[in-house]
Image: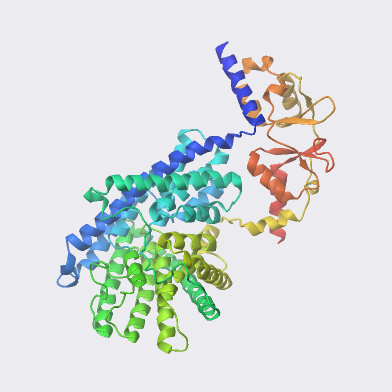
Length: 629
């Protein structure tokens, strides 16, 4: 008798909450909080591992000796890091590796956001070793996958429905970006623009909650652990880059001449971004025949990177008269090793290339641009673990500083190299990932410089437009298409806005009355093979709907069937759509309510239901329209 009472109370509670507008989605908010906290904890551990390895391998153990008698260690260190990554990936965790953000997007599109939780540990180890040993890559790809793996594990543990798992994965991705970059707004926009491609309120709220919670939790963790040596050098939690006040103060404004300069910068940055994308594709083809090397393939990539480091230092000494242009205190690695954040900081502070003539500075910037492009390609395509956001920022900063100094050197116009350095970061990032909104906000939050927004808007849009003209896919969507996945974009909704709902085939309704016993639902389901029914009052006005989910919940306790009525089981949070509304509205309604069919009413009387339209018929129409286009 007790199970029957509990079942009835559960059904009545769900119906009562739906009546006052509380949907099941509200339950995702505390889950998003949990995901934010767990992801921030792992982000701090990941950051600590990277900084600890950098400090031990390039400062305490080698220091100045590395660039004198120990030059050969520039090959040994990244090669050893690559070998460790290969052993962990191939033998310890027996993973096939992956592409970070690309894998997360594919999981959202293909497997409803399922990612093995062990991937979080794998990415912390492999990416930490890659970055810490000098791999020319970034932390954002791994942290996105770490957050997604945490979300998937939490979702499975709490038995979250598969339909809601992609949203949880988005929460983890936003939490990761927010934690590692101190960019809660950028993390939200990156997730909505790149991972989920969905800006609806239903998606926005949990993602924002996870991002904000992760940001606050990371501050707390770092403040608590800052006194421990393993966490690495830190002085609190602030923007990654310090921007001098004079560079882009609050009164900074863009003139016509400067606007033209930033537009040219966007054009150049678009070309740089496309070059990185093409080099990544070329690198994968070049390293594919070496797949049989197994764990030794990342080691080979690390050795090649080390050889490039020695060549870079030799060229600097040969043409510039300086063996290591950046001091060890500014950046202990060769300038194109690692994430390059220290290099960007010297560019913003004006100390990059100090003591060099203008011509020598231009040569150094060209060298850094070329070696960063090749170093990132070698690191990632040989099996190293990391992302492309940090390399994109370095390339953008280098391109911006190069253009600014070139314009000043020519003397045609007066440019601001520091401002161009800052704006170039977002422009190349926009060209690489095709996400201008996220790029603008990430750069703003990395620097906390409000003056960057206006010129960055112009440069990022021009850069993305240039990149799309030269190559239609981003570095992420290119890999997705190779895997047979077609990522949707907001423009795809235009085909749905052209047609009204009555363009789709509708099923006739089998109306139920409020007082009907629930057993009648079971009988009709068996006779007609249907799983969704409309409930009306005695005048034929719509009152609710019963779906397969409600039927399944009741059938878990079959003894309760004789005790329940249709009114006690039906959902009341679903309202009929007018038959004249477009298919985009229908698509949004399916996302909000997460059911397989929706009632359709008359335009002048929507509660007078004339039929039921299924999600399957909408998807078939969408597929046909896409094939026709």
